Image (tube, one colour):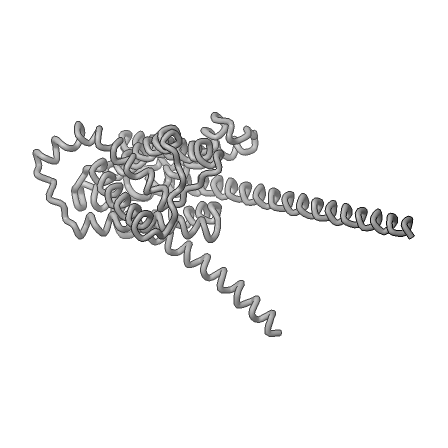
Amino acid sequence: MGKGGALSEGVLKKILLSYAYVAIWIFLSFMVIVYNKYILDPKMYNWPYPISLTMIHMAFCSSLAYILVRILKVVDPVTMSWDLYVKSVIPIGLLYSLSLWLSNSAYIYLSVSFIQMLKALMPVAVYTIGVMFKKESFKSETMANMISISIGVAIAAYGEAKFDSMGVVLQLGAVAFEATRLVMIQILLTSRGISLNPITSLYYVAPCCMVFLFLPWVYVEYPILTEKSSFHLDFVIFGTNSFCAFALNLAVFLLVGKTSALTMNVAGVVKDWLLIAFSWSVIKDTVTPVNLLGYALAFLGVGYYNHSKLQALKAKETQKKSQQSDEEAGMLLAEKNEESSGSKKNESHD
């Protein structure tokens, strides 16, 4: 009885912890999105400099990651040659900097709710680019699912009250670069047996992002900042904003490490609905019935995609277990054969 109770308590504790990790990630992701919108939107804080904001984030994250890796030694740095850094990390850093720049720029033009609807295209972009680079196998059923998601997003865009072409182009560009980055991580790092958690990822990638962002910053935002004297930063606003961005990376590490990437995908759908509700009720963004109809269709497509991924993972785990049991049975059979042959030899000696 005691053992059963202890097992139940252990399972309950594990479930509660998983929900806690999900809640922390949703809260921090929610905070970063709304905070970035607040800073960049001309109608709110009115500091519309997305490259500068992204560089501040990268500088803050680089510094904290260096302290955690080199000084406090919370995590060990990954052994990485200069050749591997140039061929793998730098391309990923370039894609990451472009993704962050464009996604932050979109907040100037689009509502939070509509941006979340456009982000539903991420599975479509990841799958399409995965097929192009031969990391995913083409399946007509999966492609039909991707088309249904795309149609849903198109309907949501059609119903958007404050549609802005520039904002849509920026957000779609951000989705494309982020999807390419995720596929490149698989090709350039994971295939070589290298896995970077969010801290080591920031340690290697964030300084690289700063360099890539510095070039457009000098030509695009630096002249405007000097002209308008916008260099006087509110350290409370930008400090807490940057800390939220860094904490979000740690939350990703906890969520994926303690649960799975699939759990994060499912939690992401919950977060999107919460953001749409917040955008409509608090920020007072217009959300039309056509918006919701389109996103609901895309949501069903994303849900089916996540379900298919879960089934594939379960099938893979079952196959691994059956292979292990077959190997164990083979080893036992071999041991029995050795024992029987040994006993026969002893009998012949007698």
